[in-house]
Image 1 (tube, rainbow, N blue to C red):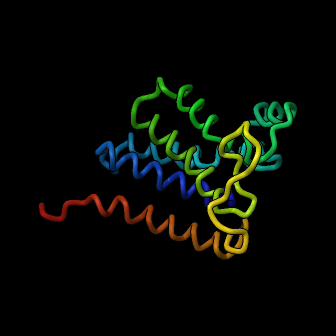
Image 2 (cartoon, one colour; image 1 turned 60 degrees about the horizontal axis):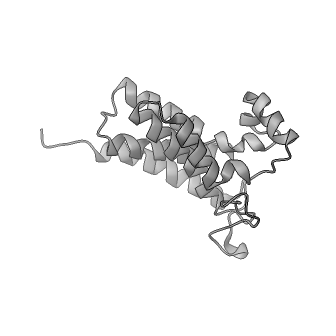
Length: 166
C-alpha cells in the first residue's frame, strides 16, 4: 500500500481512539492524536529503502538494512507492535493508544496485499488475508478505492459523534 493509504488508515485508527476515550474532536489533544495517527500509520515502512519514513528516520532505516531486515518482516510483526507499545507506555493514554492503533493499522492493511506480511516474525512465512487473485496491488485502483473509503470514514467519524439534540 502507498504511504497516503497508510496515513488514511492511521487517521481512522486515531479517530476511533478519540471517540473511544471521549475526547472532543475540536480540541488540541484530538488534533495532536490525529497528527500522530497520520504519521504512525506510515512508520512501519521505515524498513523499505526509498520510503519517506526511511528518509526521515535514516539512521534507523540504515540500521535495519545493515542487520538485513527485509520489508514487511520485523517492523510489520506483532512482536514489533508489542515492543513499540512497551516503549510508548509512558505516553498519556490518548497519545499512547492513537500511536499503537495507528501503527498497527499499517500491517493490518498490508495483509490485503498479495505479498502479505511476516506477522509472526521471526517465524518464516508471510500471511495475507485474500487469495492472490483478489489481493490488492500497491497503487492499483482498488487501493485508491480503499483509500477513498478510509477518507470518507474519517469524515463520518467526527460527525457521527455530534449530538444534534441540543
